[in-house]
Image 1 (tube, helix red, strand yellow):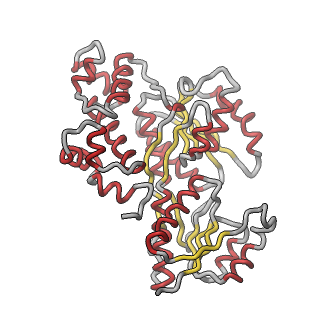
Image 2 (cartoon, rainbow, N blue to C red):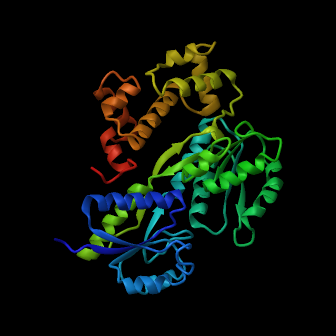
Length: 390
């Protein structure tokens, strides 16, 4: 029997992202039973828990560590054992990091808002966090490619307390043209922004459409209106990190690159449930697609019948309003629905085909692969919430 490896896990489980990483590590260990874990004590048990962390871990003699940027992280590095870092602030160039594809996150949010017909955009982020700057750049670049500009408010958390942020946002909001699509670097900032807007006469999502990142369900669902957010596939990254750490310790195979946290998709809720499209016919057609294509195999002609104009005119207006075709919008809604069911449910591909009214298994597989480059089963293997459990 293999000796189990002693792994110190130093994550902030108050955050959804960290809980996702921990879920992936748990999934790996459930399959392979390789690890025994060290977790530092909650403050109600030991008030000096984090300050004494390096000493306690050193005395425990772990084989490896997976850590956030805890107090005295350099002291953990000095233990000279395999360590994977999930940074809060910036990448550690000479270490193995768990890091998101944050530029892609920004691009994705921009594409979502552009497809809704917005022409006014804003960004709310942090000054000193690399991941926030990367999300901002991806967002700004994609919006710029579409011919628009982004107005940004950058929060300097080293000089301003979070509870003082709303007063600054109240000065910023009147400078934004409405309707405005606002990308917040995190769900926490989305919640602050939402509560600030509620102090004004403006409405969410009619005047300000808000999208955050992390899909922290506790934050997003407690808000009113509920908050849309980008979901990270943190569970997959946690699984990959556990696998990499195991190989590093047992075989001396240090990972060749950082562990990337891919994006699982956008979870839409009420804070983005609006269309900034003046053309009533296009707006009605898009509402019809959003409400119907998730469960029915609708055609372009079905969409045309939901309006009072011809197919040729509607196609032209789609291109003018959102730079997309009717069929492309139908496919987008159906593909996103399939992705969600593959990631978040245990439904088989056949059952998903029935949910969306595909005629057979081959149709949904061909349809999905044509759009994503992957079969449904390949996509589930890479992106499912319980990734690693094959």
